[in-house]
Image (tube, rainbow, N blue to C red; front, side, top):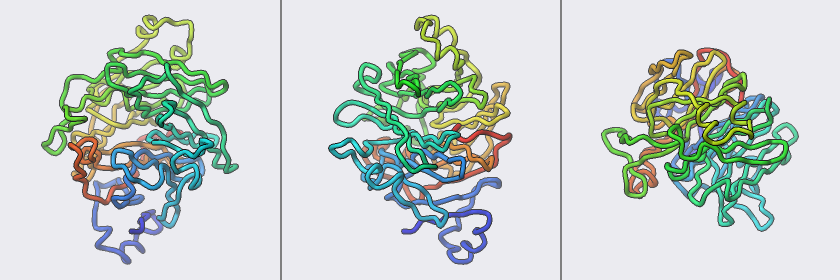
Length: 366
């Protein structure tokens, strides 16, 4: 099934060619950028400075041919950065195991956060889209990552040459990982801190309680973003109602003990259970409000409100900030995937890539 790319200039043409397929409408302000069949469930989205759309395919559905794809202007997709790297690793290590987190930095490097394979080592793989070549590989090995690691969301901080990673892990041992981009040195911090651990609240979507490995889902730190001034990292557990933040200067200070670093964490505001977040230049933090089929925002004062709500906003997942000052977001019905639905795939494609205008300007890679 071909993908259909909706842009402002092509919308009327596509509607005339395929009115039935494009009949789905969303709340005013939301545009459908692309829709995907069951074989291509979206994970997270990255938007490069020159507006290339790079997307991970979610491992919770399994069986995808490629780990990363690029959405082309005509709506088709191709493996990114090429078929070899988008496939499982070969004997030389070329390829990817399972990528969810993906970010494009201001230099056009797309960073892909690869979860461990059989060797137990995760990786950050950076691909230079402007030169079309491998930029850097940074390895994440034990004890920095535990056996139950799940490398999830992350943010790129070019000002401080750092990357901040949310490792959901098992909940009780959820943590942040701070990576030095110049040396590759990585540290695991705030392991088991209150701001990392899931709260004891049920995740109820469409009147069904979401389960994971047979139990009610309780998921630790996941949504994470960095403000455009590179001053604050905002984050929280997926299963949580609090948004936290910590200064990058504190995360980067190796002289602080764990106790001293923990004292630097601030509770910033309220939010619903969420999977992804991003931020604009005005300090508005966008939230994937998954239990309410909504997208919301935490304003600079820490107050939450719903921006868009619709039954078809069925598990808004990853956000990407575009140079067009639009926020791109994947919608993948993840609560209906086998991993979160007792082994049964109850999703009803198409899945979507959507976009909506930011309240304020932003920066690519947030």
